[in-house]
Image (cartoon, rainbow, N blue to C red; front, side, top):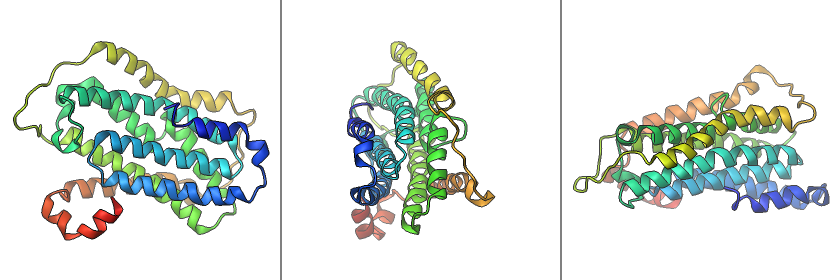
Length: 275
């Protein structure tokens, strides 16, 4: 989680040299499209590590775009909070893959919360922090970023890319939750589940505590003065609306059993393109 954000950190350090360049407008467009593309292709992916890697790519696009709008402190804040829950997410995914005898395909998983409850708890909480569920770590940075985007005088395309990518984050999180937790145990032959690795669980609980408190803690500590945000009620609640819409869509699509092969073949070209 620190390695992939090294480039973002470098641009945060050098942001005074980049200020008022035309290059930043180009960067804003590219990073917004990066968020959008990573969110879409995470929804069509069946590899657990690829889904988490694509969600990291989406968050990197968020950091770069808010950086190119000239708010490096917000980008750094989101980088720190994102490092907490994404490291936790990678640890949980590693435990799950190791437990599944090195199978990464989420179609083989299911009912994992029945076998490894504490790891599943950490996985779900870090996923919800990634979505920006209120009062978890991701909410403080993500909500602030989206409100600053709502206040800025940018065009409708950037606005749409931001909010749609936020909805897509919720979408692939609910999809992951359905595949991993809700379904029955799908691995027909091998039955190699073991109990929790408590050395891992200790580390994960430290990260879990951090991803619960680090958002509010850092927002009190690193901002010398609070951001003045003046928005109408509809725009203020827009983040929550988009999250609820993504949750509903993820629930409906996951209940549709759209991953059964015949429905996938009905929109084969579109699915292939989006994947």
